[in-house]
Image 1 (tube, rainbow, N blue to C red):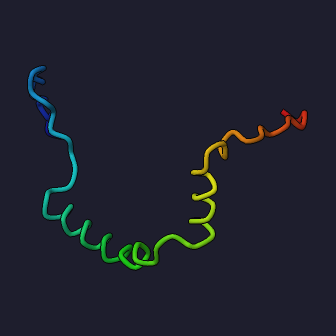
Image 2 (image 1 turned 180 degrees about the horizontal axis):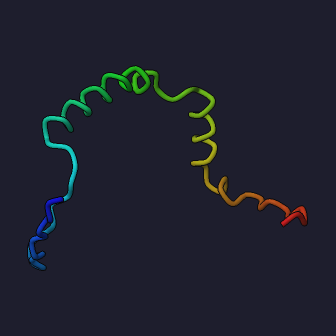
Length: 72
């Protein structure tokens, strides 16, 4: 079995991370965009938009704290 000599790490030089090259990353990105474009085009359902509007109203977030049921 061959020994692999490790090269000294230079503290001033950032280590090269293992991973995918730019071409593969680009292909994956294109495929993910193609898969999720339809989901993005669907937009936010009306019921979610209404909930967001309610939460954006002043005092909505801290209107009434939940009561402790004693089951902690």
